[in-house]
Image (cartoon, rainbow, N blue to C red; front, side, top):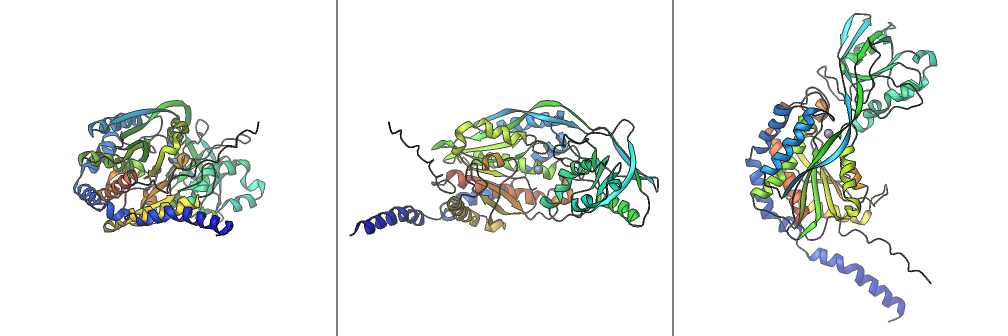
Amino acid sequence: MRLAIVVAWILFVCDAAPAAAAEAAAPLDSTYHDVATRLIGDALESDHAWLRLSQLCDGIGNRLSGSESLQRATRWAQEAMREDGLDRAWLQPVMVPHWVRGEERAEMVEPGPQRLEVLGLGRSVGTPQGGLTAEVVAVGSFAELDALPADAVRGKIVLYDVPFTHYGETVRYRSDGAKRAAVRGAVAVLLRSVGPVSLRTPHTGAMSAYNDSFPKIPAAAVPIEDAAMLHRLLDQGRRVRVHLEMGAKTLPDVLSHNVIGEIRGRERPDEVVVVGGHLDSWDVGQGAMDDGGGCVASMEVLRLFKQLGLRPRRTVRCVLWTNEENGLRGGAAYRDSLGDATSKHIAAIEIDGGVERPTGFGVSVRRAHSDSLDAPRQARALVQARQIGALLAGLGADQITAGGGGADISPLSREGVPSLGHRTIGEHYFDWHHTPADMMDKVDPVELRKNVAVLAVMVYVLADMPEPLGGAAAAPVATPLPTH
Ligand SMILES: [Zn+2]
């Protein structure tokens, strides 16, 4: 054979061998069929997650960063993990922002008077003592705001009356609305709540940081109904004035904790699969869907493994992150605690979209420190995850799609850790999101059980399958030897 042909043949053999080996291995859905059946059976029979969610939501309540109730929830979760007999359950210290809402009220004083429902946005400053009163100007987009003449905005309250399209799109007005209005000289912002429907429920949520070059102006959400009323009056050429009082304050950072529990792997204990949600919530409602249900479902995965005497090949870790809602400090602290060991994290799953009927998972494998996907590992991970998904077909949760992750695991994703986002039908999640209505009655006990089952199977197989999700990460490029 000529040299070129020999080289080509060697390359072909080297390239083909691992693929052939992978083809020859039994698909994951047949290897793990029996254990999946046991996990699903136990999860669907148990009301343990539901009772635990009631302890958290009804017994402790909502859990804003810096609050005493978040501290109580942290201690409760660690104790629950110990009760479950996990190999370890510990608290990881994290300094978190401490924003407090204070008293709030708003009233349309002209025409009027008429009381408005209002909920300040997280991170907002308060109004001056006694509140502020100003004329309202309504806009439907940032482009409309920017097109207004200076005197139409200066000294006014800007009302962003932006219909909900999808969360990622509409939430920009909550994030950047105050900043953009301050640049134009506005004195406050009212935001049509970021949600598709309303029973006069305002939705809070975090704003991004203020622009230090401009005044920090207060911002609050109003329900869809209130935004519509103000906008109707303005469209009729009426002068509309609103009085707004907000006692919001940002106090010094306080100590909080991620709560972490684990079952050590039987063969590769240094390799870790993470599953979790965020324990903090907004200070209204109970944070039942966002994200009490996700936390409890994640805890239940490990409890089920212990109950069934299952110890997968790799370590399984449940992480309940703190401060997702107004800082993301918990996710950052968890990543930082790993130092250079992120490559030992085989996969991370976040459940933070509520616990309605589960439909499957989204999967992303990024190149470390890059915005692009690691295409070969992504393709391999999708094949593997779809085999696992086949075990969830009976639950209707076998949709495995490209693109997934979560806010708390995003620092891990950026290190190239394969990331999975748990998915549901999401029929009503944004109806209740960040509102006083996010109470436990919104959680269907049967759907909660299905979510536990789906997570348990996915986590078990990821932690036990011989080859890691996406295959081995590419070896770092070798440093050339010095030439002298
Ligand atoms: Zn959440």
